[in-house]
Image 1 (cartoon, rainbow, N blue to C red):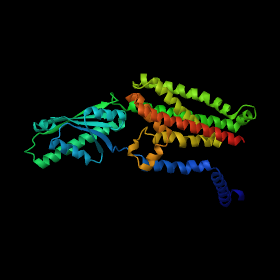
Image 2 (cartoon, rainbow, N blue to C red):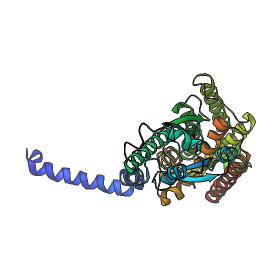
Image 3 (cartoon, one colour):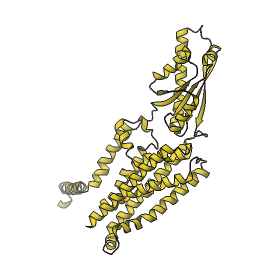
Image 4 (cartoon, rainbow, N blue to C red):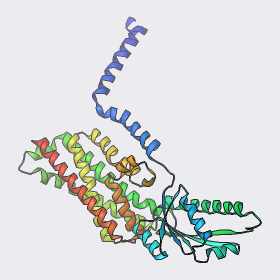
Length: 379
């Protein structure tokens, strides 16, 4: 009966706890998940992620240069939300929107002050709908800005001197006629799906091959490491492209998301990003050779950053500078920018060329590193 006494229970329990603690400390992946992941998530969500919309780049076309119109425009300069950019004409402002230098256009017609003196004036606001979560707040902030300016004007002139003078904001949404977040989210979901298929699946399957020893068995044959890696990558490249086609069909025919850009450019850019994702998966699997560790690193290094730091959900312009630097180091950031432009805006070649060159560079570097690490481990 003594072996079942309370003293024996506590000795056995403490011995088991010490054993499990040592085992936990030996497995660094457990510490990474249990301690590292919560710290990273707290840091990102608590410090780096913000749903506020600030520093709105607004092209201002002021055809009326009267003191009243100038006073209205100067109010935008003092706002913490807007960053007004003077535009010489409505045509040049529209070009700024197409080039991505402006997110919206504020147009004051030449008869703005005259209309206001008669009791009702109109101000046109054109907003880019390619980022639907940002378009709505821009309209709301401008309505608040108009109401604030009107109240200050009434207070300054006196109610009797400005009876019934009101400004009506005429809104238009570009690049998202339906004004729905679905058009904004579907291209981003394609990026996440391709990241998951390319990185996570490849890293997991290749790590399993390492664990079973089948890759080492292949490498003792005359087959070269490059040939083995290409043979392993090709099926998953096909799976990733099939997933892309299915996502595009679903987006077009189920959710009515338009494809305003070149379909060929979209496919070529997607191939480049899929090569990037496959390169990350190969590099992870070659470096770890363990399924569990490869799956965790793949999630931490590719899927979670693509979800939270690529601009899929949160606007990168609202993040601190340090987080922005990390965001712009991610391949997914450039692919999301590129695919949303091709879906919603069309063929904007300067951005297409820039992002494709960046993705091509990432693909070349990552695939070369994966091949080098594999060769190094064989030697």
